[in-house]
Image (cartoon, rainbow, N blue to C red; front, side, top):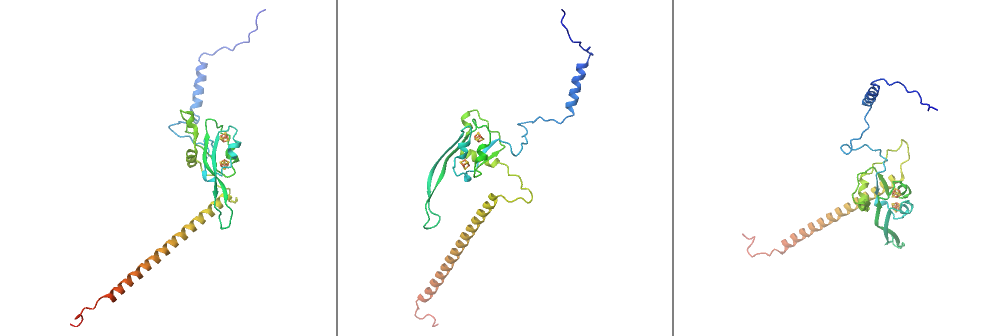
Length: 225
Ligand code: SF4
Ligand code: SF4
């Protein structure tokens, strides 16, 4: 029995060429999407997960990020330090001091869990992505490098109109005001001390001049001309 073959359409000579030209014309009029990287830097969205920055001042070494990291690629070392009481009669406190904070980006899967779980806003995403290395060991970024990435973290988006101000901003403003007041008080104290020292010096000079006049010996015949 003969095999059934579906009927084929007769081929028009030059139809393939016409199709190809149609595709070329269609794509010629479309906007190009090719990024000319590295000659032109790509415009990345602000929430791009490029690299993680560490804001060391906010880190309390609670270890939450290292415990929650699914890849176990955050390494933290610390030691305890005794802090003297804030007021006389108070109790001494102990606090954790960070010795090492490193992230191995050869293991990291950029899930963002560490950033989400950090209760003290010490970790941030940066859109920087140009940190490829030829040696895999170089992909473990230590705290200094993680801190450098903080300069590339984009500013947070503006608040919605009428939104409540974040507590962090109020706390930062309060700290800045306190610091400015302390500096002003120190400057005023220094100026006062300098003024007092100047007055004391002037008084000393005046006294010296007075005693010099008194100590001037009376020469015989002087003033009897
Ligand atoms: S992004 Fe995810 S995998 Fe990478 S360090 Fe953070 S928790 Fe670990
Ligand atoms: S969770 Fe935040 S505060 Fe705690 S160790 Fe990690 S970075 Fe530091």
